[in-house]
Length: 342
Ligand SMILES: Nc1ncnc2c1ncn2[C@@H]1O[C@H](COP(=O)(O)OP(=O)(O)OP(=O)(O)O)[C@@H](O)[C@H]1O
Ligand SMILES: [Mg+2]
Image 1: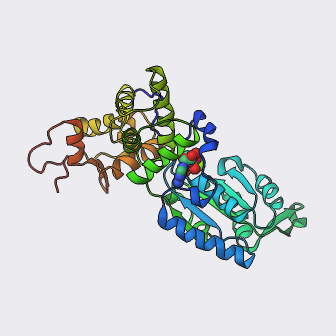
Image 2: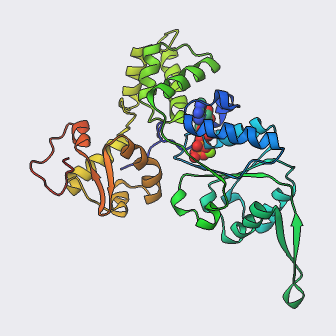
Image 3: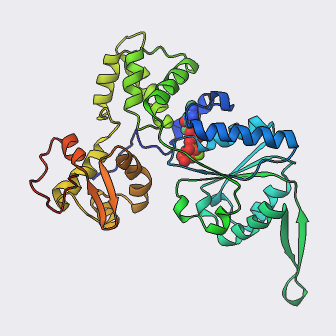
């Protein structure tokens, strides 16, 4: 399957960087994730009351659901600075030490893609998180000594799309864990309306509703599609985004009302046609669709599973009966290997 630019792929692309204006700044503007938000709000007020830094915070969830946004919101709510880096950028211990020693009391220190930390850096981070200190080795050979350097108490916010491969010593040092789930229809509609307001785009209610439904429960995707729909509306001389603009826009982009793109449908089709509906191993499937296993697991599967079209089983990936219906293919009769008839 040829690779192509995808509008519903949830990882950040260049264009999304302009989205800064759309990022909620405070919890009150952060839509959805209700339970998580309520708890966080309690922890933040309690830490502020005590004049202490907030416990370290671990954010888990698929791309584009608001992890970076929430980390910034926490800093704003705490009224502290936000210092941002990502694990791949921390190459040498001194890269981390430089950042840690410059933190002010209570600052929020955000490490994105925390599952990609190098072991030596991770070790340093343990002491920084636990004791607000850094063990720094000076000298070499028999003359080497370890100096403990004190740093200001801070809040580490670590974000990952792959909680499964984060080491348990690191996980155990986070006091608070927030797991993001895909946003429901109501929250997605609220996000479209909010973004449209901020970008001064007019959109009709039924159009917003269809757009919300077609955006894979992912705020980044809905913001991106909203801008595309504005282009289509402008092109056809409409003053606002109407239902028919969204309908024809989505069909031109080959996105269906579940937010599935051609690639997603191709994945399901390949499992059905080449592997009798599965089970098929992730490696084999990734090769068949011409993507890496990582891309398959991070970007395609979470939503296909959430939408009830795909299942991960011990023996591999299998499509569900819903997937047959979606593609208009008649499921094989009987309880053949390839089908999940419940
Ligand atoms: N709860 C929310 N309410 C409103 N808008 C949101 C919300 N969460 C995210 N967004 C919007 O979605 C965009 C993507 O969010 P963000 O960059 O925080 O995702 P992420 O989880 O950090 O993704 P990645 O894993 O790729 O780093 C933001 O620019 C923001 O505009
Ligand atoms: Mg992010």
